[in-house]
Length: 265
Image 1 (tube, rainbow, N blue to C red):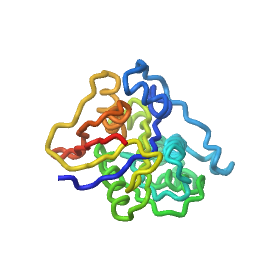
Image 2: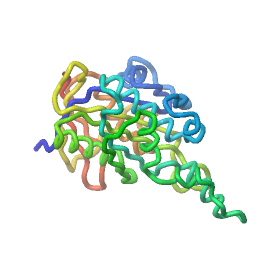
Image 3: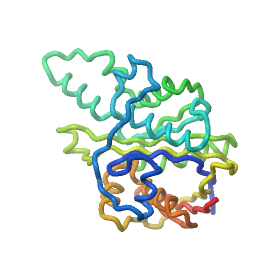
Image 4: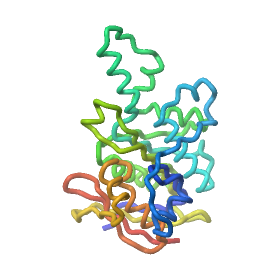
C-alpha cells in the first residue's frame, strides 16, 4: 500500500567522485566510469563575509547541494520549507570542542559553541538564502536519510506545497573516526512537489517494507552506500539517473526498509 507520494523536480549531489547531479547522473547511469576523487567544496558566496569565514565543511556542503536542487527545480530557495538531516552533524567541530575540554584550557570559543548545535547548518542556510520558512531538523544515525525522506514526503503531502530535503554527512577526525568511521563527506538534496510541473523528473511512491535493501553492483558505490548514512540514497539516485520505471528498496531501520516505486515523468 502506497503511504506517501511526490514529484522530484530538482536534485543536488556532492560526494567522492560525484561533483554535482549533472555529472553524477552520467556516472550513476554507467555512461562514465566512477572514480572516487576527493570532494571539492565550493565557497559559500551567499553568506556574508563574517559567516563565510566561520562556515565549516558541513555548512558548505549543505549550501552546495541545497542550492543545486532548488535551482534545478526552478524554485527560489527562500520559498522552500526544508527538512535537514545528518547522522552526526559537524564532526570536525565536535572534535575541536572535545579536544579543548580535554586540555588544561577548557574555554570554548563562542563560534565553536554556536556551531555545535545540530541545526547550525540549516541556520546558515537560512542566513544565505534569506529563508523564513519552517525547517525540520532530524538525526537518526544510519537511518537518517530514510527518516528525512519520509519527513519530506509527509510535509509535501500535508501542505500540498514544495519542500526541500538536505541530507549531509562529514567524517570525524581521529580518535572519533575510529569509533564512527566515514571515508569522506556526502551530501544530497531533493526538491519535491505534490503535483507535477515542467521541472518534474520522476514521481516516487513510498511504502514501508520488510524486503532487503538494494545493493549496488559497482564496488565503489556500494562502499559509499554502506559507510555514509546520506549515501543510503544512492540506489534511488541511480534509478533516477537511468530514467526508467523501477522499484528500489533503501535501508532504514533494522527490520523495516523503504520501498520506492519510480515513475518517470
